[in-house]
Image (cartoon, rainbow, N blue to C red; front, top):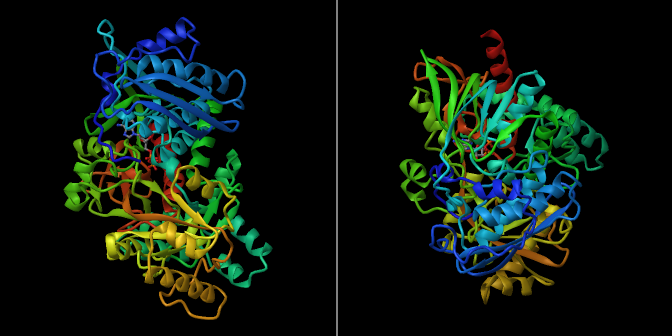
Amino acid sequence: MKKTKISGFVSLILVVALMFAVVFGVKNISTPAPAAPAGGAAIEGAVDGTYTATAKGFGGDITADVTIAGGAIADVQVMGPNETEGLGSVAVEKLPGAVLAAQSLNVDMISGATVSSTAILAALDDCLAQAGIDSSKLTGVVSEAAEKTEETLDVDVVVVGAGGAGMTAAIEAKQDGKNVVILEKMPYVGGNTTKASGGMNAAGTKMQQAQADATEDEAEREALLDSTVENYITDTMAGGHDINDPELVRTMAENSSDAVDWLESIGAPLPVVAPTGGTVHYYLHEPEDGSAVGEFLVQFYTQKLDEMGIEVLLDTEATELISEEGKVTGVKAESPTAHLTVNAASVILATGGFGANFDMLASFDPALADAVTTNTPAATGDGIVMAQEIGADTVDMEYIQLHPTVFQENGFLVSERLRSNGAILVNSEGNRFTNDLATRDAVSQAELKQPGAYAYIVYDSKYAEEKLYQKYVTNGLTVSADTLEDLAAEMGLEGEAVENFTATVEKWNAVCNGEAEDEFGRNNGLVTLDQAPYTAIKIAPGVHHTMGGLKINTAAEVLDADGNAIPGLFAAGEVTGGVHGGNRIGGNAVADIVVFGRISAQSACAYADAQ
Ligand code: ADP
């Protein structure tokens, strides 16, 4: 993800053209657009050409082609042959015309087809990024005639943010029979959750037991059975340098097994269990098909929201909490067409972190002003700011996690799962330099000390067929070769570095075969690298997760500076602080959003019932 700064861009957008397209049945998706967008000027940074991208739709791949001509979006084509007839197919048919007419991605999703709509917009966003266009800055066609209306909505529970925490909370609240609405500032759902690349940590689960029963590998069996709630607490606290809020950690750990069962019960099972980076234990629960947990959950959740009739107002940015006599009673928001007041018994903030707000990052660590981020441009800390304005307290704001394996050109995150599956990190001299599966902050710091402050993640082809691995190839991150020497050449290693590199892999294989101790103390993901072709990705640290955020208690109530719960205000996910302490271990973001997403909804519903 390109480094992006956004600020309230949606308030300018009026998608009159979409209404035109829908009302008048404009179907021709290749209608040429004006040479430049309405308003005259070409889109900033746009490079003319035709760009292609693919995203996973409901029925399979959706491919988008965008042609930029004269600095404007000149043509939009979308192919999604396997989308559900009458639902996803409508999105495939309508959205290209709407985007073309609006010269923006700020168009309404097709109701009932959020999975397809999300995939189409994600693919179009990718095309625009390839063309050098920051889609969040496209304000669309502005109609001078249209004025925003004043609108009011009355609900039991309003959820702000349709990432993993928000969607979990909304589903849980709806299951409780509440009238719930989600406000989402982007034209699509998912937030940073879409990018969660590993699995979801949980302890003491029936999936761990089943895998322990099935495996013939005694060490794996032992590690699985040892992945208990108490060890999960210890590992999470140790990973967070023991500054985590122990009560929040215990709450997450004790509710984690129930959370994976809940996901299974609503149709999103995570049956495959794998080791968690930074620990020797097996807490990571993953989808059966090897897909990344974030994409899997976001796709599932969007479909579930449709099914349950939960309304998501896209392009609707919450700007202010409504507070009366110390109680939060709703949210003010801006949509392209309205100033919106949502009156609610309870408000759940699920707006994510601030990993894409470079001013905010730099206020805690000036070195991060120009960092690469893995975050979506939406991660600007809005929920933290809004809650602070009414007296909420924050915690651990200065703890900002760098992820050690980020492709620097576009902020694409390379999952820890690769290292769990045997990948190693090698520097430009062809040498390993750290326990590759130490905590993220430790590995990042080790990388920054290498020549050039970068490294390569190197792996063989044992898992090449998995979706996760294929994504790196299709996104152009990888170099591959049939021999280690040729791979070294592809990586740009020369002379002694090539010899070092082949010797490094040999040494690693000896460790995996039990012939030697690992010099860096790595004791998990011991899988040999011996199956050609071999692959490498050049990586370096990038901003990944903001551990700090709003201070909450174990009921996900937001606390004020005196430690008192602010009535009516709840929060879950990356907008909160305390769960991860000084460093989040991989797999705990999803554990956090599912466990605390549910708890925030349970508390919000109980509070609403009591009003
Ligand atoms: P989490 O992992 O905690 O669920 P995510 O980053 O996945 O966090 O999701 C946060 C969501 O909140 C994103 O979809 C983001 O666009 C949305 N969001 C952020 N700020 C606002 C806001 N002011 N109003 C509405 N939605 C917001």
